[in-house]
Amino acid sequence: MTALPRLPAAVTLDQIRAAAARIAPHLRRTPMEQDAHLSALLGVPVWLKMEHQQATGAFKLRGATNALLSLPPEALARGVITASTGNHGRALAHAARAQGVRAVVCLSRLVPANKIAAIRDLGAEVRIVGISQDQAMIEVARAVAMDGLAEVPPFDDAAVIAGQGTLGLEIAQDLPDVATVLVPLSGGGLAAGVAAAVKGLRPEVRVIGITMERGAAMAASLAGGRPVEVAEEASLADSLGGGIGLQNRLTFAMCQALLDDVVLLTEAEIAAGMRHAYRHARQVIEGGAAVGIGAILAGKVSAQGPVAVILSGGNVDMDLHLRVMNGADGLGAQG
Ligand SMILES: *Cc1c(COP(=O)(O)O)cnc(C)c1O
Image (cartoon, rainbow, N blue to C red):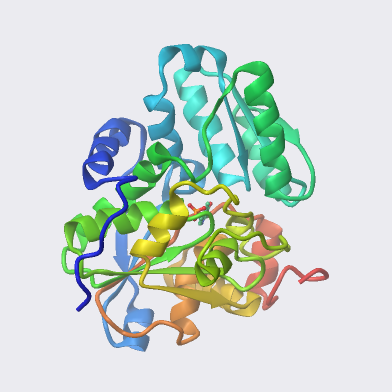
């Protein structure tokens, strides 16, 4: 067993516990359900954390709500802004509306139409800028400087990480002997927060980040030992796209210290994860949320159980979902 990991000072268990108390009135406590088929396949109990059933359809509401409720009143009076691959923008729009705060969401053209529409429906101002998350982030920096809006970053922020970490507290409460947690990995806010929570409680728990082969910035950065840029490509796991920022402050160091392994999946393996969730667990989940199941089905994680698999979101375009259920192993023409 590995020694107690040295937790980067960035986000502590106490901050995550404080976040849990702060956001509890505004969020659903999502259930965990055992998956009989995956348990039989792996030979140890496999539990699904049904976070796609969260309000706004993804865990991002945890971090966005915690960050918003942590801002001073003067900042809330001016409004908030963010760049997003979709789910964080939707979460911030929801949290801002609940508090009567103005929200601006900058999105690249890679963000699916269903996610853009959902953000507009929540009353946020949407700005479509460029063809990558990094380009959307440039517009955020401009608006922060020009209009005095407060930025709520999608992952590289202590309040956001602490909010996402509340999901790890719930896993540890519902499955006290959990041995392995499979976490979808993009910017690393979810992985950093969940790992800080579960390892803060029980250092021996393994936390494995799972992402797609296409354009996985955190995986490339961890392999290279420092934040690097990768070309962003369209993927079934659209919510795992985007860079980690060359000036990354928190999530890179936390993922470096706290993740036991990173697993990469092909588009076909992600599609298989989505199909399994639908056929065996009757759950509609997006590609970015299907990577944990996909990794088990592909034989890419070893059997140390009980295993908790985070189903991080369900905001999939329903026409795409139908095509994948009918056997498509990618986005289609581009995939
Ligand atoms: C944002 C997102 C992730 C990745 O979270 P990070 O904190 O960026 O690593 C995973 N799944 C879904 C559904 C998401 O929206």
